[in-house]
Length: 267
Image 1: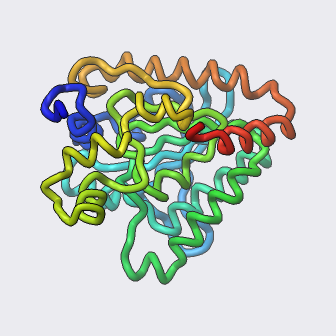
Image 2 (image 1 turned 180 degrees about the horizontal axis):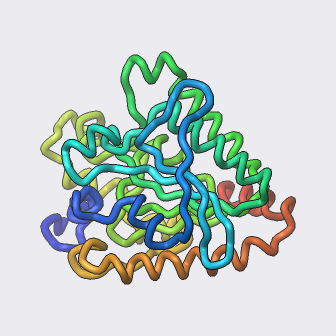
Image 3 (image 1 turned 90 degrees about the vertical axis):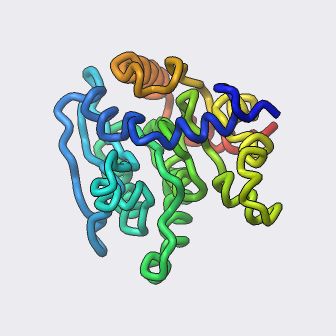
């Protein structure tokens, strides 16, 4: 196992977690025009780990939802380190239903270590909020594209990853659990995290091979932070191309294709 090499799974985990890595708000403001942020779930409050609103992609009016980490300790505290609470998932679903009403395609930027897990989140229905998203998003009758830009952790990521197309940056990760959690639960040895990262198959190339994602977005050596402008341009081009394809599909066929996409995952 070549765990110290720049292409190892563990190295990609470290790159996915870099503070300098471009965050969801940077993608939104560099890819969309006229972005207007919306707040609140109309039930409990506003979760600042979710940035969401409407904007224009070229000439396409879209709804965009992103999981947002901070770049400093202070920002991360405000953004809850990108760990979404029930009100965040409900805000996301509220805007997706609004997008369906006004026939706007949806973009999701996924970047979270996982859903927030504390007593208050459980009291407010964390599990139900995630499950509700999975059920409802499967039936949203507008095109959805999700982009994994950093960490795609557990149900927190999955709740924004029901999509017609999933793109994943080359040095991002996507998994049911972190390598730390995997090693501590399966082997009872946190020191085996590098080995865990390898056997879990959590990299973009691994997941592309399993038909879980549709496109791997290449990054410059050392990570996306080293050439943000080019990364934003590439992601924008992919989104425009995806919506050019998806927006002309009949709505019932769109839902049927989305269902079939998840039936063949792993085959």
